Length: 470
Image 1 (tube, rainbow, N blue to C red):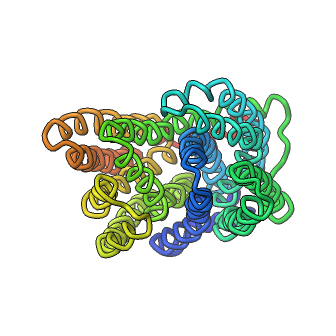
Image 2 (image 1 turned 135 degrees about the horizontal axis):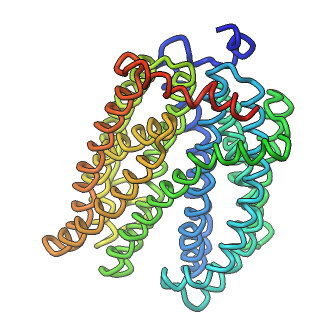
């Protein structure tokens, strides 16, 4: 126990109400996360005011490409956060710093590779999304400017994970909140005052991504002093540990953009008006449910620290509290969307199939996020308990088996509304199963439920890994 004392002050999730930790971590994380989603919607709104559909379409299509990059960066952040949180919970301060240093170096390289891959696949992706003529030219220009800033964005996201692993939800929130404020202020100037239009939106996005990295590194290095540069051999050992969670988590996070893409392609069969409605929905989802997206990243460090300290009762309670928080929030958000649906339709001047898609979202699809949230919380448990492949399988099952047959038969049954109903029903089935699996895994990892020999093998995550590294 004495080994844990040097970092006891950092392992803030080992004591106190787990529900309080869940609420604070989720709300602060959501504020920062939703600021990004909000300004994304604002940017698209500003561009739409130019009255040039090709520029609006370009930004919308570019968002699909950037969604894949964001998903991969967040996946690496989750792996980093899990390993740092475990080390902090186990009282292994130097290991936590080493994991953080390794992650920053690695994610910078990872970001460069992502940017290069984006350039290589850009035309193919735009073709898949039906971009032609001026819309294609604008999309290329936008991505040519934004893609080189990918390494900075990835570094900023990972520093958020490191801060959360140390329980500093407030500064983690500041990183994206400051970026959101910068975007809201700079977009009108670059787009309208300078007259740079879509180029101005892209330049602002690149500037903000650099600010993510600068502010995040200042908090992690300057405030927390939570990073050390690992020696060569230690770097690869740390990287392997991080990738055990990060690699499958990256694959896991790619499932959501794929699922959204599949639904968008199905909706596109019903014309431009339906696609326009789906574009509105794609921006309403993160605004309405950014708290749920943040919940997974917020619950993860709480579970990770307590698992590192082998406080399995608190691990189980953190999972329960996350599910309760998810349920309460979704019911409130769904109710507000139901009430405000006509106002939303009026804001976007939606008619015909565009209005139908928005109404279906507010009335039906929004409620299915109760089960998407259950999936997110379960994935946080899988990742931080050392079984990230279960999260990968759950997410891909949800976004493929839970989407393709349901929207196919839904479209056969009821056309456009059937697609939305099908996606919603798929969420129910593939949201409940992971929760059952998460509780089973916690029970399996609880020492009291094992034989002495099995118990001796489980603590591989905390002290044993450190002993091996040294």
